Image (cartoon, rainbow over all chains, first blue to last red; front, side, top):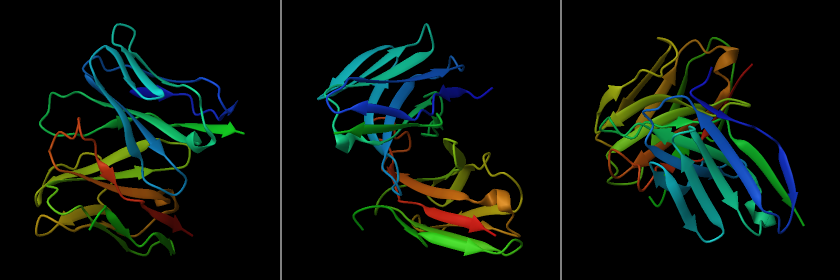
Length: 113
Length: 116
């Protein structure tokens, strides 16, 4: 079993829809949680970062962490065709002095006009 | 440069040949990471550099894989005697701070390696 599980999709939604992306994890030592967006043939770019449990909002994006359930989510409101990409969750323990990340498989999202 | 630069962007090689992949991180970034992304898989950690030393190389899949970093800057990932299962996108990332949790990494666009 992988430490981080993420449904690869693909997920297809109409423009303007609310998108929910999720990951589950097994390592209770994970404390820092991130979402990366990756466009085709590009490297991932950091979208959201959260520490421990709770919510964080940035524009149309909201990240949620539920450490008791070992479950994290990314919500995208008013989705746009430009949001079409692969979304990767990532996390690390914070217990070490460096930033090695464990990633989910990524969810492919298509937002059609 | 403005971003993390990787070369070549694409590499096709014959099984059994050696390949070198290059990463030029953002100037001043002391931490450098190599990851591998295979079809349908997430990013798989390979190795971490802090300066020129590699405190964690636990993700290197076999002794055919090696990496070095010189001058606290450019890094080279070498794969010897390539196998078809080595086909993947090899991504390099750098960060200003070692933890990279708040700022995140800056990734390059990767080298797409195909072993035929």
